[in-house]
Image 1: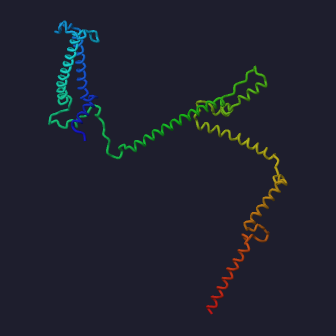
Image 2: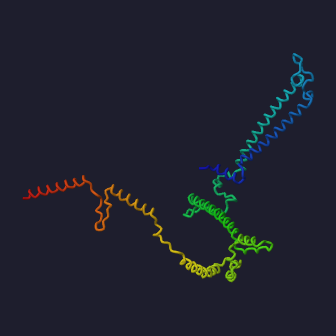
Length: 339
């Protein structure tokens, strides 16, 4: 369980959008950066000042070999540089120590008294009653059966996915239907009149190529019913009336076809059977009888008798005779015992 200090830190972090310790770290880092810049400026200024003004002797004792150092400086300048660098290091260490000591006090004071909810004993537990602005008017989930559960959320997610799939499929089907309608609309329009410059044979070919279903909308009956007009495009009753009006014409066509069907010659199917077909039927019949004989089935058919079933062999007949003789002997023995 979270402690009181953890709850306070979480509350302040959510309110400020950053942790309280982050603010103090930024302040300390800024001060350290300023100290570093100040020390660098002091070092640069001291190195640019003549060494005599800083108290160094003008002529320091030369080295034993009398040669200059690697940087082309004499012994006095090297000694002054070493002294300045050592002093700068000590100054920087002193400043860092002082800043760390004082800013640690600032950090402790700020966290205890400024960036906190309350430290008074009478206000203990106050953080549990504080509500931030973005938490106001939020209703907690109810404890009844209507509360969302992981299963219900997953079920709703699957429903949304299936709905999206269905919507995509419907859009694709609508696009296909629109493309099909775009191909069918020219067929429903009236065929364009042939140009007078075309020859008679070309005129006939052009009319054949431009054949369409325009008669469905350009016929007199269609014009009377308003078929094809945009005003009645979605009228189911009007479309039904048009279909019903076409039934007499269909009946006339069926009657005409029946008259033509009667005049067709009747083909005798029995006369078409040739000798090769009869020979094939006889061969199949003979092979069938032979197969039945091999399995013991009597395939002979007489007009007065029926088939008695499977034909019995000699061994089976002798076995049955032995069984009958044994049964007869047993009956005779039982009769003698009774007498």
